[in-house]
Amino acid sequence: MGRYLEEFVQERIAKYRELGEQARNSALNAKAPEAIDMYMAMAAAWEHLAVELQHLNDVQPHGEARASTPYTDPLSRTFVGRQK
Image 1 (cartoon, rainbow, N blue to C red):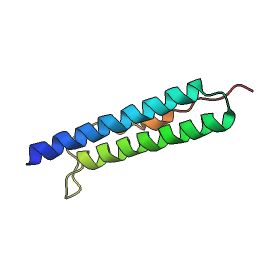
Image 2: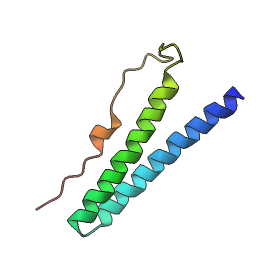
Image 3: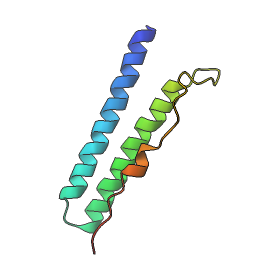
């Protein structure tokens, strides 16, 4: 049962990242500034869900981290500025 749940969590994380990527691509293809902003907000929300779920998956119930890798925020790379 535990292995199934682990696979489910990894599938959800991958799906959230995929949806974030699709939203970013839609922002790059959008013409209206409002649509670009909306798609980028959607991308940030999906990626935030992925990061949160990954973090919860990395922390054991007693608050001990499973891995000692340093935390990096992937959302810091998602901003795409608009040209005026």
